[in-house]
Length: 598
Image 1 (cartoon, helix red, strand yellow):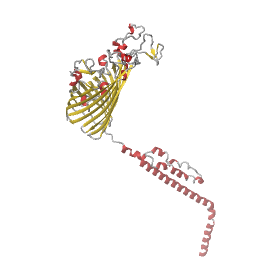
Image 2 (cartoon, helix red, strand yellow):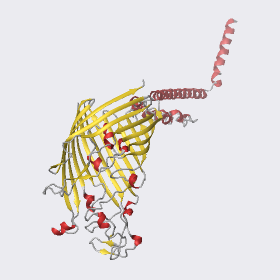
Image 3 (cartoon, helix red, strand yellow):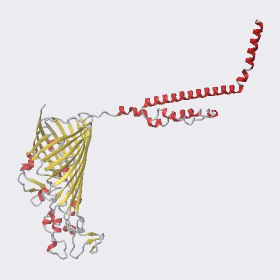
Image 4 (cartoon, helix red, strand yellow):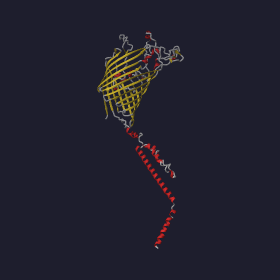
């Protein structure tokens, strides 16, 4: 019975196994396995993509952290948006996105390169120099006094003859200079007693002296000029008040506003110092005969001083003054018409030092003509004092007062003084200046006795307008000045050096006649001068200077009788050359005292 039960059980199990293939088809089972395999492959590929993307993002983040710049351009190259095209349901196309990571790896590669100049950009803050702030403006009460005296003796030779001023002691300066204030409000009084209290006779050279004839009353070497009463105003070289306001102080930049009023030297060119402030004995020869010694006058100035650093500044100054000057401006004497000007000045105070100035003056100008010289401008022009000589009507008659019509003069100066200090005992420098003058003159158009108004290039007079119009100013040559202005100029150049206790200067200057005075050919008159100045500073209180000056003057004149005697034409001028030699020994004494409140 037991055996029968066992056999039935085995048979029942076998029948069950026999039905299993009918319940589980073979083909669907293989498809499920293939789908599982494809899903696993896709999952692995996606994981690899994510790993690569994470690697690129980490590398890109390192690049950003390292160079800290270029975030905007780099964000455009990030591969985060590149896998979007890989959205497909077909299993056969799942292998195509594999090149996408390859493309994304090539795009950020240029951004990873650090060679372009970002490395220099990181170093830029190290190269930038530290800004040195402008020194603060401190008010401090002070008082300064200086006494200065200058004496000279030497020989003055005109041609081959000694002048009467040779071998005589002369007091050139007797100065007391007082300054005081608190740096914001300052005052100054500079008195030069030698300027206004001179009582010796004034002697000028007689250029008509004939060296081949004996020097006597008929052929004098010098001519005395009546001495005018001393002018106390000339003693006061500087009486002024000055206000300085520190308007701006910001980092390495500052600005001061300056206001000055009184009598003082106007800032024109680089030779605007007082005699007690000069390193050498004198200013240039051109400064005396061309600019009339400068512009020391009553006036007012307003300036802006731009402090570019503690050693460098650029100053712009406007000034208004009476306009009195012996050669260039005569408003004080003739018109009471003030002059105006401006000065632009750059200053550098280091071992290499420099001063550069551009100055401009606009004022009234008038100068008398020589009324006594034969065949001169005044006599020839006023011989027939009519603008229309054909009618000679009273309405167009010219008088002496007509010459004094308010005319203008434009003055320009461009100069510099630069050098290098090798140490406290040795320095080398060069200074130079160019001056230009353009002045109006009274010279209206005229009609000659025959009714002619013009003259052509061949010298033919006509009333048809050919050539240049006839003008009123003329001299004995019957020639005339062809314009209504007179332009002239002058310049100088001076290398100099300091070697321990010695200051040495060699200076050359050249200038044309500052104005017309005798003849029309005065425009070609010229003065060439050479100075050699050796100063021995034997102490802080005095110096001894040896100065040699050579001057060559070229003067043109007209003499109708001379031309007729020697067969010259009526238009020929005579040219004379005069040489001056001056050797002077100068002794200066100086003492100063300064008090400042601590």
